[in-house]
Length: 97
Image 1: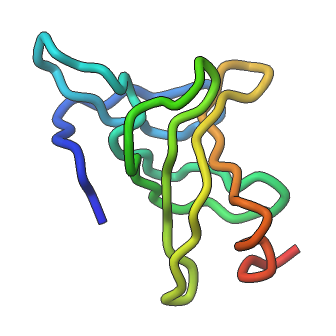
Image 2 (image 1 turned 180 degrees about the horizontal axis):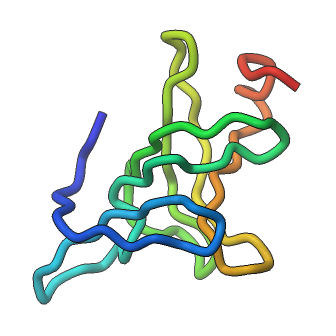
C-alpha cells in the first residue's frame, strides 16, 4: 500500500511516528507513512499510508487496512499537533466504534 518513499522518522505529540522523504523535494512532510497512527473515533492505532498529495491545507488523502478491509480517509492534525487518521464516512462501518 505504500506509494511514497519515506526514510526519515518524525515522532509527533500523540505518539504517532510519521515518515518523510529526507530529500529536497518533500511535498508530503511526515505523512508518507504513519505508524501507530490513532484512528479518529476508535481506540485503534494502525499504520496508515498517504495515497496522494494534500488536496487542502488541512488534509492528506490516506488509507489503511483493518481485518483485511481497505479503509480510505485522510490525515489531519489533532489539537496538540499529532497526526490523526480520519476515515471516510462510507468506511466507518468497517471499524469498531
